[in-house]
Amino acid sequence: MKKLFSMSLVMLLAISVILAGCGNKNQGASNANGGEAGGSAKTSNIQLGMVTDVGGVNDKSFNQSAWEALQAIQKESGVKAKYLQSKSDQDYIPNLNQFVKGDFNLTWGIGFNLANAIGQVAKDNPNKNLAIIDSVVDAPNVKSVVFAENEGSFLVGVVAGKLTKTNKVGFVGGQDSPLIKRFEKGFEAGVKAVNPKAQLIVNYTGAFDKPDLGKAAAATIYNDGADIIFHAAGGSGTGVFNEALARKQQGQQVWVIGVDKDQSLEFGDGVTLTSMVKRVDEAVKRVSQEVIDGKFKGGVETLALKDNGIGLADTSSKNVPKDVLDLVEQYKQKIIKGEIKVPSK
Image 1 (cartoon, rainbow, N blue to C red):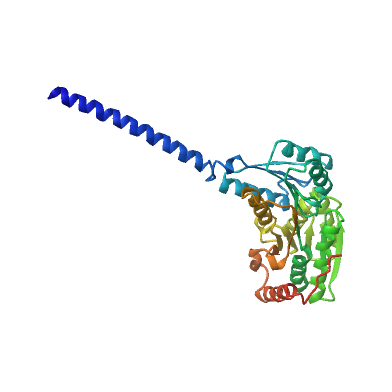
Image 2 (image 1 turned 120 degrees about the vertical axis):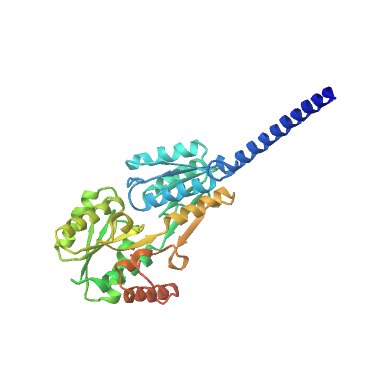
């Protein structure tokens, strides 16, 4: 009897070891499928690259929005995301090629300045997927995402035209280009629609990565009597905010209208009147998801007011009165319906 009991115990222990081994194998398979960030083994092999323009990944503007979008995709899907920062236009092609030659599934170029480089790299690598923000590259393996910036700029122009106390408002642009002209002309049209007597003072810095030039441009405009400045100057726009903050410390109330992101989150509600938000983040997420799903196709995608691709920041009610926001909504609907054609040049 004792011998039979001993044999039964041995057999029971053996079966337990076998079952434990099976359990460990199943757990390992589950972890492998789960990935580090909730992704699958399939998505963990997908690589997304991003090349900034000279404004850099911390430009508080569209480069930063794009990178934050890729970081969110990485966290949600388990894909691998990486960026390379361009210090000059000479870096564009080498940076793009680093991702393309590294077999990344999608390589982003952020900003219209990368258009020629994207076009060249796409031509040299017809089997690689590329995408660009703010410019159109005519190639079957490139997805181009552009925005109706003039429409969103019109809406913040309505805000500026209604709220200026001096009847002078300003615009600070980065490089003088067709893209930035869309911001300027849309803004001017919005101001004039509600305040024909208002004067627009325009100043271009010539660069997207020079905050000191942005500060100097803003100082000139404020000194000329403007109390609100809308900027479309990328990293140079940081200088516009710095000038406004310095003047506020001296007791002068001046305002800045931010661009691309809700810039009140960075510079505060004390000087940020509102922001014209361009949903670069959503565009980057959507196109990147096409790659993840195996549905990527080249072509052009234009995001306008009707697509919720642009608009005012959600925090606008902090400084913009309700009656003005209601007026903005009325103009928005007229633009969507085609009753107002916003100029772009």
